[in-house]
Amino acid sequence: MQESTYGPGRPTVDDSTAPGGDVDRRTLRKAITGSAMGNATEWFDYGVYATTATYLTQNFFPGHLGSLGTMLGFAISFVLRPLGGMIWGPLGDRLGRKAVLATTILLMSGATALIAAIPSYASIGIMAPILLIALRVVQGFSTGGEYGGAATFMAESAPDDKRGRYGSFLEFGTLGGFAAGTAVVMLCELMISDDDMAAWGWRIPFLIALPLGLVGWYLRSKLDESPVFNEVAAQGDSQDSILGGLADLLKNYWRPILVLTGMVVALNVVNYTLLTYQPTYLESTLGLSTQSTTIIVLVGELVMMACIPFFGRWSDTLGRKPMWWASLIGLLVAAVPMYWLMARGFVWALIAFAVLGLLYLPQLATISATFPAMFPTQVRYAGFAIGYNVSTALFGGTAPLVNDAVIHATGWNLFPAIYMMGACVIGLVSVAFLRETAGVSLRGTSIPGEAEEEAKPEPASA
Image (tube, rainbow, N blue to C red):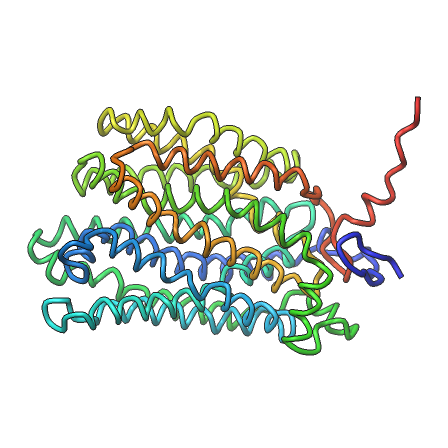
């Protein structure tokens, strides 16, 4: 029995027919579409929420709270994400990836659509922000199982030597959902008067989440289960219970959880600062118009979407660690100059946002290739979901709130850049402990890449 340096390993299965070999293209396309659709639905909500922040403030948080209340409504959705990860993750390792993913997308899209039905503060008083926050909590709970499951399913369905390439389409869905949310709000602003947009037009984009979710549910219900999970389940090595799987994970695989958590600090502080807080920052702090802000974010997201498959493909050749090193160091160097440039005007803000977005892509493009490969199959879903969501709840979802609060308190407009730099330092330390898994099989019940690393000959002594 092979022992793991992170925890006890079990014999791996024969790799002769691993996903790195022949993969049915139709099945792979279905897996990509089903996984990416859920991610797009999740981030459609975030895109809509971020772009309608001004309208949400007017309708739900009038008075002294202002945009801080709206950012709190955003951050609160992350409170139950770790709990969602602790429930959905072990369920996915016990019952399979497919059933959990079909359930979470319905919860997520339903809660988003119901936001459109909440009366304003002027109509029902304090119950308006309470209902908004309650629905954001439901979204957070369902998202706790959504992202980790989608990335795990994608990674286990892709060929080993093309996991970065195909996994990047999951993040293409992320950016696509966010861009679609931003574009829908911009279209509504062009077609509806300012007064009507503030009164009721902002509700339309939230309603669109329901048909998106139903399409995603249909696609996921037609998926085949992950072949990697099926093999482990057939051998009787899947988890016997939710609590047993959770105990196994925390006892034997705490080290990869810590590494993943540190990397996600950098990943999500940058993510939620750039993609979620940016509209509020450009409008409230720098004084750009709502439409100018929307254009900047939308153009930046479209540029990122066009480039992300290339970064995913490069990671299959160069490795995951070099991509992360390049991204973290690039952001560390460029954050302050680019945020200084944003204050020079519309064109400079557009350029600076695009530069930071491109520097962020090597991280974003490789998430679903990097993080699932840190855990063996029987705890992969839970390991990803718990580590990712705990870090996201503490540092990702709170990033807009922290940025907004510090700028309001100090007037220091460069704080978001400093915050991103601090997160990148944490990420750099964590990446130093990451095992390279490009091209490594995810099959079996040992940590991917561990056997290959242990088999390397010791360097000859002088």
